[in-house]
Length: 124
Image (cartoon, rainbow, N blue to C red; front, side):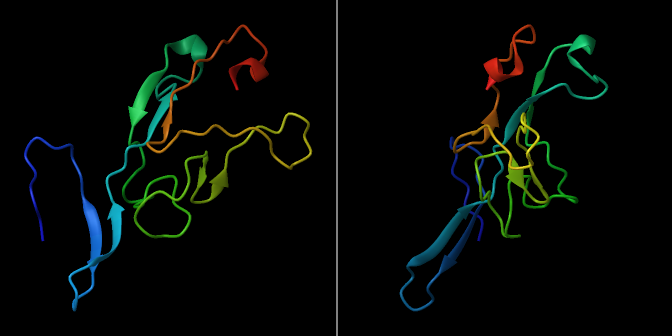
């Protein structure tokens, strides 16, 4: 069932409804909203140009549920830099225990200020 809601933001929901009562049992927003400040190709470093905000960059074939999926079902499972096959974290003391991980919030927007002249910890 497709329902258009004119004037509303783009949405695609997966809804499971109880056949006997008509009550929604689960409701999952299937539209990715992830955004990352990045040095996109062909840039290789900050020396090559400015960061851009990349919105929903996950390849739908390689990552059909986005980059923040851990359970193979539609919808992000985390607001941190983890999912699929990675947990991205700093490991400044090299103890393999991980450390700071940015939180992109409910919409997973990873667009934080960075000062390339300061010590790395200043940008956490």
